[in-house]
Image (tube, rainbow, N blue to C red; front, top):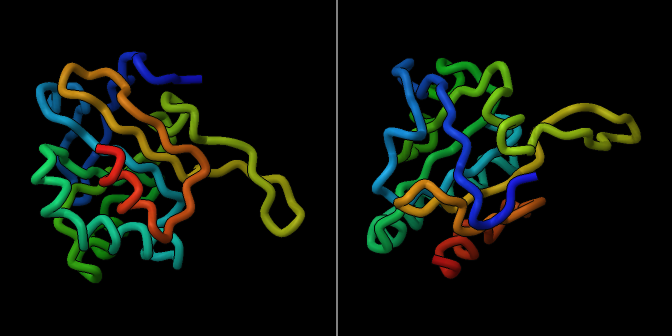
Length: 150
């Protein structure tokens, strides 16, 4: 399990526009990397829209917000356009990024055990180390909580 001070695992995925993305290319920038289960679901929409509403404040603190889910790039592009999200969304279709960050876990859904993304946010420092981790996030109010922690 990752902890504060650990190097952030590099991830190589596609963005909502289909471009290649490597987290290592963000070195030198503070990154708020938030993992969410699925674009367009109620909780994920609340979380994304709260990050959208605070995007200037995040920028003012020198932080770049990036969302990660197992959706396809086309689904992420649609989600991004529908809610006018001003930040990059990453398509972790094979869940390799979620596994590298330890957020692909067994969950209990309506009495059944299923594998899925546990809503988690990582703040990554400009030197590529994990600065803060928010586990088992509640979507409502989370963006403000992260902003306050910066």
